[in-house]
Image (cartoon, rainbow, N blue to C red; front, side, top):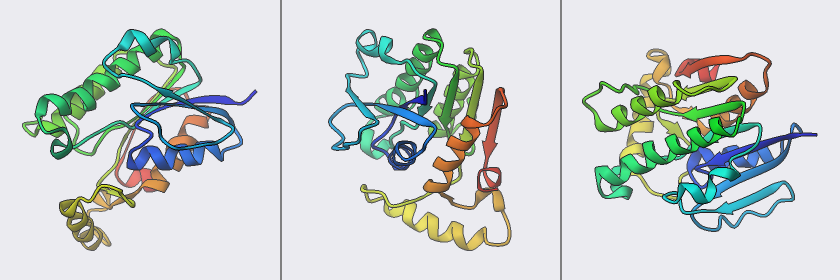
Length: 213
């Protein structure tokens, strides 16, 4: 029997690439995605759960499989308020991690961010750091946290600042500051899958250049 992958954040930049690779990977028999609205994806291996993330009791029992990939995230521009961003970037992901741990899902993979720090004065970095601190207190046979630099991929949502940042980052990191080199989302997704499938157990943090290696 193949493995069952669970994904939240399937409609995002990393999530889309991750789901595509999982559906084409021979080790995975089924891919379950948890989304707010229909994704439009159709595949024999895909099972789509349309849920209300605020109604934990309605979906927590469905979080069962071999690995939970958590790629959920938003921006303050999209969320409108810090409270809304915190709910998406921390609360929803933390609740899914708790459900996975309670249901004995053995592996958990979180896409965080470079600079994540629960003591940071930067709101976004602080959220990511608080989430990392929270999930490392849960029991998983394998817990992987990825801290990519600025993501490089084709977004449906236009982010002018990110586009400029990518151009500057590519230039500055060609020979120096390699940890800050942009992270192609296809490379990140592939690394997440390969790290999940290797035989090592326990906690591992992968950041910057290590993701690209």
